[in-house]
Length: 422
Image (cartoon, rainbow, N blue to C red):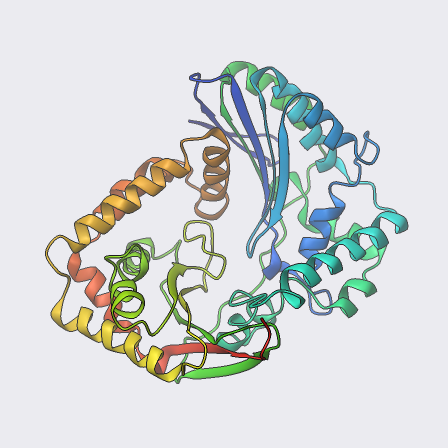
């Protein structure tokens, strides 16, 4: 990899791989759901949509046409701590991709018509993905307000209809000026790219983007729980109960060595038929129909900042109670902390985790996105090569100590009460 910074503050990482004539270009902006101000819930996601509605020198839909016309694909997504935009294209279309991303970094076309249209699009997305879907928003929208108190950590990242409808062009312009600065972004290029040529083209297209400083990050720090928090809500479409529980974990960036055992622990508990909770709860007791565990409410352990959590979620058979499920989780955590890991359990889990890490970055798009997230959050894109080793160095004792901290008096949980839908 090669890493450098333009005069306007844009951070750039190149990851050449000449094995196939394909490239992936990604731009990550250091703005996400947790950057939204009160009264503007859902705005980060809404603005992501606006970034596809035309840019400084391109009319609406031109971005789509130029990428697809070259045989490529593209998308963008909004996360807790960043928003990303990316393309995968034949290697010969590198300059096209760089021009497209640089053009919208200069400025999207912000019109009242575009804004109102995209507000309606986002509202329909909420209807499809949350309001009219069983278990919609569970648990990533429902659990944070139980665990956290600050607006940045706790609010609904999809947004309320009232907040979305109240958004103005001035809001959008201010959001762009504040957060969509070159100094608040990371550009990555992975695949069949000549680094020297790439530097020339990046300087050509991004070098004259006006410099603006990165804004201060939102204040997100808040103390750990000192007692159990628990809430429930009725989902009129859910046919059966569900429950999710979360515990605060160490800072993923400043305390990486303390954080990684929790990443491994989540896999020990829930990854595969031989994992602790799957074997006990799904296969043996049949107390749940599925159970999963991950770090971060959006399941991205290496691209999330503090505060974050280890999350467990389970769906239950109809008519079952949630309390015995939480009691079983507590029992298994105590057993792991007291009796330790079984022979071969840790090694099997770490081998599977290393396989997933390598597979996820095998394709150029996965590599470009992963590197961008590591540069943005950790300031170290080379972690893409180190993570399999670092995960493999986590000891049994560290995993057992992590399990011992997941006590009921530090737990936040939310229960889905089925409303009789099918």
